Length: 386
Image (cartoon, rainbow, N blue to C red; front, top):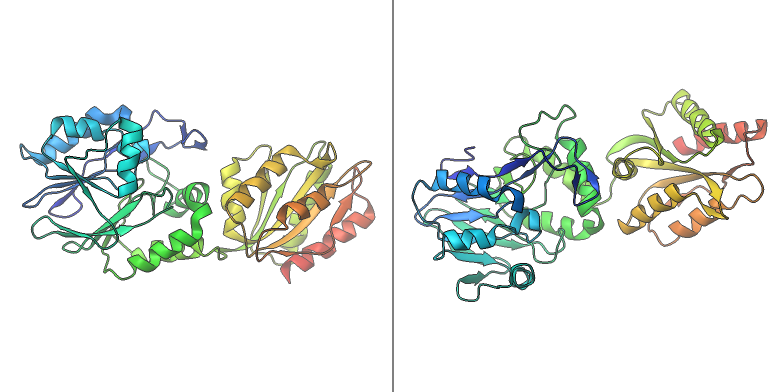
């Protein structure tokens, strides 16, 4: 794939994977992106997952066409990007490795060598000239590992963005839902805990004129960049992306489900533009996390279980806490046949999160809905929309 006259794509698609990072369902596979700049000196950007080292090396050699690379720039040390550093050095022993100081420490951990005799340690705003292509390095700690750097090429105005602007899915699969859906799930699943660091990165990147973004996963972005950057600004600042209400719930015998379905109907009848129901026992949990951050209002509805929160809801709350969930309106519906306490436990779990507007009155169901509960849910629907 040609990015510009001098920049070529040499990555691979993975259709063998079922769970990315051992937890994220990726039915459309995954791409591991790598790039090469062909200039007076040649720079390769990152490698790929270990299982695809041979295919990657073939892609690299095809573009090199007998030439020798001068540099391997290692922007991120996760094994899906760094596993072929040793293979590269074996093939091109005279090439230098360019990375952050922390990255070289990790190379020692992963591969037993920190390449002391052939390394260039870079830090914020360090530069490297390839000829007409002049590279500037941008440190991006905790987006989403501590060693991460990104690279800006001033000649073609390309930002090599490491895992930022990444997306689930192989590049040879048509994504009918568009870029945002799987990019959002990727961001909040993997990077979302580090919103402040990602926001700081966007501020640093704004100093550069960018025509193309080359991430380590997902498609190269070279049109309508303001759309992608504006979405990232929304995500990194924990702002509301879409108007609507998401109802995240668990239900054992169906009574809590009936309550949330009634609430959905009331919300729609009162003009809510979008209501999403997520049964936490059945939906992909990372889809539920994505929705929690996408919408400005969320209802948590669950049963009391062993004098605590039902397990799927408890796990969901943990995921929100881990990612610093904030700036949202929350309502709680609890169910309990003899000692309902889930509402209290949810409030305790959310107590340390910032900027949450938790509606004061919980709806408490004892086994099945009463006429009073129905009226409470109607009142709740109106309160959620105010």
